[in-house]
Length: 165
Image (cartoon, rainbow, N blue to C red; front, top):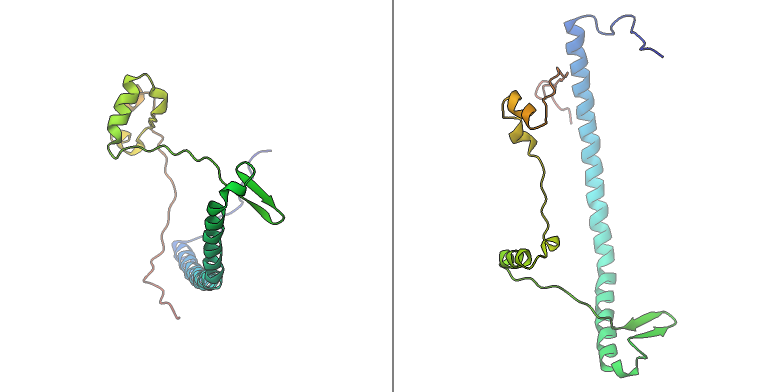
């Protein structure tokens, strides 16, 4: 199916274009009001939820400490590392954490010396903004290219319409 051609443009003069820009700006103002109202409502809901949740969070934290204290004192009663109960389990698991010194460069150097380069992460990417500053022949020589096109844009003048609110 081929492209459908419009019979006649909807706007017929620059005055109509300006009027359309005004209408877009008025719609943008209404969208801003809606977004601001929604943001205020979400903030209120989050604050209320946090306030309502805080006593439960505090209670859980206190009970977790009590569970840990009791389980540590009665570790000998565990069969293995975990104790199953009707409402859950308590126990201990071996946790291994890797600790790196603040001078991580030394570790990276030593990893490379020991043939452990697979432990070093290198992320390379093209900085398009800097590459765009080179001349077109240089850009083409490295395998990239410039795509040039006229793209439509518009902006509304925010100070032209007074906010009645």
